[in-house]
Amino acid sequence: MLVHGPLARLDERLSRALVDTVPRGLSESAADLGNMSVALPVLACAMAYAARRGHRAAALLAGLAMALVPLLVLPLKIWTGRPGPLEPWAHGYYPSGHTATAMVAYAGAALLVSRRLLPVAVLLTAVTAAGLILRGFHWPLDVLASVALCLPLLRWPVYAARYGRVARTRADEPEHR
Image (cartoon, rainbow, N blue to C red; front, side, top):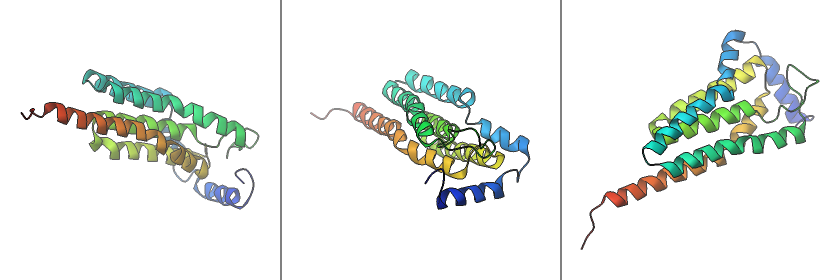
């Protein structure tokens, strides 16, 4: 179904209509936001910031979520063996590791620094996904699968941020006697 079938054919038609509709330099730059060499330093800086502010558990959980990305993505790439839009002889494009990396790194960083940065994280992830599709590095379904796959991973940093905020509020309240 993922490699052949009506959904795959629709995905391929959509991809053909979108690839190279923007200048390649722009789509490649957007896709590069999902590279580990770009996204991981952002998350690492946010983790250091959070740890320094005493939010070690949240930093640890965001790092754990990022560490789980390849453990989720790589087996699916091997299992599905879906060819790429530009390289039909190559396999392992479903789901998109770049989209997963961008989503978990940028959202994790935003949750560690300030929830007000979540729209920036969503924008960076969307720009990455669009760049991957528009350049032809991934099919649209590869990108959507990564988003769906990684949403549950973001629950850990969200929970840690909430739990930490509640614990800090309770610790700051004066004791009633």
